[in-house]
Length: 408
View 1 (spheres, rainbow, N blue to C red):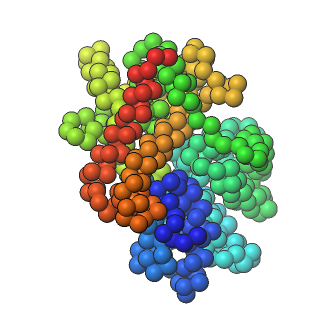
View 2 (cartoon, rainbow, N blue to C red):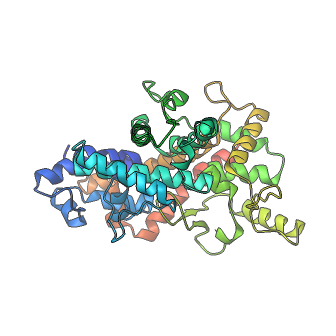
């Protein structure tokens, strides 16, 4: 496919990564680029794929460097690879595994880099969920098997929600499984907690997709809320697209409600620091914050406070259980089963993509007049960055209003 025929703006982030691995790297290699060196924007222009950077910036708020890191191009520091965890034993064994891939299995450097990146993502998620990425210490004692399998499953639940395709999930599982098998072969691990993880998810099922909640399902959920907390829970998952752990730990210091750009700020997110636009539900959020402050003079600032938790806020599993109780009360199912919180996030994602497609369809006529097959060219060349953001958010706001303000 010619570069000018690629509809960049219609691709999900995971699809862009897949396209990088299957198409762009091959084009760079054919052009003589050394794949051990991180490509530049000019390198992409030279092979006709400069449109990638615009899509990353406009639709995913990522730089090219951040995207390249996600596909394996990570700078080594003087202290070695930045695994992003503090557990020295785990870091040492991860490095040992990588050396095995490099020296004994003879894998290509780019393949090793991609595997390293996936393992780092897994370790960082484990650390985020469980407080410490002591992956090695927790598989030394066979009596810890049941507890560790539960912890590992929690990590793969997050990956299952975040990754777009079954193939991507399988690759993550394969790499993590290989690492634990490496520990077993060296008599370090007494068991491999990932050996039967695949049976939990049915990722091999042909045509399986991460099912989102339907618009009608979200409307019924919202119509069944009985408290401000439940209302905010549905908005956070379905209107703002937050992960359940992000919902659980929301703090008032992250919220910016004033001005023309209301948003939630995150210091640490999957792709680094970033913001989530509050295109819908700002007034409800403000009311909830006011109510919490008025109810308790010693409120700790968390939007979902908990006196039972040492952190002062709910945990992701509680968000999940409350969401599912609400779904049962509203009699909402997906394929006959109680929906999970990630299906709310998937609803947000599919709604955003639909809004983006609607915007592009409205620009197709202009694109045709300009001799372009991609309305994204009009977005980039004829609208300012502020105008592009404004139109995207208006289309998204209209779609969300149709759902949340309609009759259940």
